Structures are given as C-alpha cells and as structure tokens.
Image 1 (tube, rainbow, N blue to C red):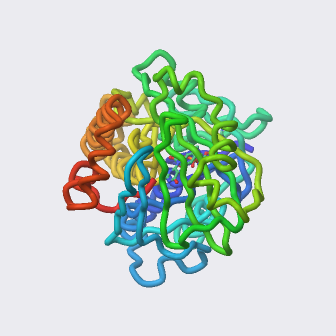
Image 2: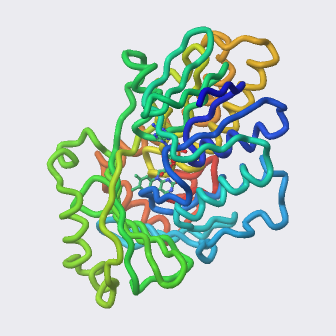
Length: 386
Ligand SMILES: Cc1cc2nc3c(=O)[nH]c(=O)nc-3n(C[C@H](O)[C@H](O)[C@H](O)COP(=O)(O)OP(=O)(O)OC[C@H]3O[C@@H](n4cnc5c(N)ncnc54)[C@H](O)[C@@H]3O)c2cc1C
C-alpha cells in the first residue's frame, strides 16, 4: 500500500479527531490513522472537562443532539476537594461537564469523524518511522504500508513516535508527571460529584470519579515529579493503602470491589518552553506536552491544540509553505491560548506543594466565601475538572 494525502493526522485521540473535525470543510485530502482498532481503552480519569463541550459545539456546529450515541455518566455538577487537613472545598459547576470512559468518548469522536467528514480513517496502522524529504513519509511497522503527505499533524500521545524521531535534541524540556487508575463498583459516593483528595502520602491527589451503572474511576495523579517524595513513592502501593486504610476514604470502599487492574501512564505536563513545529510537521495534545500541571487534565488542551493546528494547516496550504518558519501562527497561538495558563498553573502547583498550609487556608476561606478560593484557581476558566 502506498497512498498520498495532503494531510496525515497521526493518532485518533481527542487531539487528532478534533483536528479532523475542524478541517472538515477545507477540501483537503486527509488520512486519520491509529495503531488501535476502535473502540479502544486509554488509561484516564475519564473526566471530560467543560471546555471540550464548547470546542465540540464549535467544530461540529451542533448544539442540539451533540452527545447522541455517547454513554456518559450523569452530568457532573460538583467537585469536592479534600485538603490533607481541614474541611472540604465544594465547587459547584455552572457550565456542563461529564465523565465518560475514554473507550466511549474517543469512539464517539471517531464516529463523528466517520459520519460527518470525508476523511480516510485507517485503524490498526502503527507508525514506526517518519521521514521528511520534499514530502513526509509515514511508514507502518511492517514496512510495507507507506503514506506520503505535505503535512503531518501528530496527535500520537505521550510516547509520540513523531516527537522521538523528529524533535530529538530540540527544546522539549517538558516535565512528566504520572497517573494511574482503576475501576471500582459500589463506592459510597455521590453520582454527580467528582472527589479529589490531597493526601500526605504522595505529592498529587487521589480521585474518585463516578461513571454509569455504579462504576467509579479511582486513581492517583503525581503532579510534582521533581520532588523527593515523588521519586521515592510507590504509587500503586500507596493507592491500595489509601483505599484499604485511610480513615475517611476506606469507609467509602467498605462495600466496593475492584473490577479492573490498575493501569498508568506518564503525564506530559505543560508550562515549559517547547517547540511544536518542524518542517512539514506539527505536534498536538500530549505529544506537545500540554497537560495542566495543577489539575492533570489534558483532553481539553488536546482538542484545543487540534483546532489551532487545523487553522495553521489551512494557512500552510493556502500559502503553499510547510517549513517550520511558516508555522509560527500555530506556535504562537498555542503559547497564548494554552501554554500561558499552564505556565501559571505550574507555578501554582509548585507553590502549593511547597506551602501546603495555603490550601488549608483556602479550605477555611471556602467555608466563608467560596468566591475567594475559586478566584485563585479559576480566574479564567470556570469549568475545568480533574
Ligand atoms: C491515568 C490518567 C488519568 C487522566 N485523567 C484525565 C482526566 O480525567 N481528564 C483529562 O482531561 N485528562 C486526563 N488525563 C490526560 C489525558 O488522558 C490526555 O491528556 C489526553 O488523552 C491527550 O489526548 P491526545 O489525543 O493528545 O492523546 P491520546 O488520547 O493518548 O491519543 C493518542 C492516539 O495515538 C495513537 N498512537 C500512538 N502512537 C501511535 C503510533 N505509533 N502509530 C499510530 N497510532 C499511534 C494511540 O493509539 C491513541 O489513540 C489523564 C491521563 C492519565 C495517564
């Protein structure tokens, strides 16, 4: 097989599918490829941040039956944050947010691509080599299937083959956190509330997020990877220990049973300088290191970067220029719309881990005036979870 396209989008996660949806009226020939066959699982907290809904509405121009065909949990109306000491902070969300397994959510996005665009979708296509000559040559691992294109948009996640092959030695100094998750049945929690626990056991948080049918996504995110505590902690053992022995949390798991093994993955945290373009290539989503270092969410950032990459792609074809120097609009737009906020959150995350009493103070303030606390974390975006 040897096929040519204007654009190849590598990875059918939220970054890749959203990018395709944003390009649906471009008239360009596009291939969206993924190593998996969908629906596929992806280790995640399954909390779909509110901005994803706004982005989807924009790229699909669909306000009405947007989530038809998606199995989602009851909408999430509250988040409870429990500091290690002190009282819980309750955040009531005004905008819509929900939880859904990534098998369901990502498959829903891919089905949108299949049903509303002319994209060539190729599953079970694991790329193991990328080379740039006057076109980009994308080779599948068997070596017999090759795609060529003018522009490669990489949304191939944390272990991006494109980043490894084409950006080694460039300014990718991003931090990596780590997160694990499992699924439990019969946890004693509210079905509309995401719970976050900041514990002394690890520099990050423990979460319980409700899904449908009395199933809960339970996990731990380590967000301060350079701390001594993060280097020494065994995250799986700590999570198990919290579930079995934490005085408050173990009560919630009294009648619960685990229904999935624990799975984990690196979190490519954003907020540092990164170069996102090379000749004929753009990085998006986790491949571009865009996870929020304070809260650990990245689906919204992946989708947002997908939209920005789509805009740049149209400009590239209009000007018939695909060199990195001509893609500054994308680099600058990601900086302004995403990285600036992540930089601030990286600073806040480090500050909070250094001075944990600030959070206890925030909890105290929240009892008296929640707006004060919300102002600290959510100055711009009012509906982010995780
Ligand atoms: C445990 C955990 C919990 C998390 N919880 C949340 C949460 O609750 N909310 C949130 O917003 N974020 C969460 N995140 C972060 C979130 O999962 C990512 O930010 C998001 O998935 C990034 O989307 P993406 O499209 O960039 O990459 P991905 O979703 O990783 O998609 C990449 C795609 O590329 C494909 N691919 C990879 N390599 C190749 C290859 N060589 N050839 C072909 N295809 C390839 C993969 O199969 C995959 O489908 C969590 C992360 C972890 C690890």
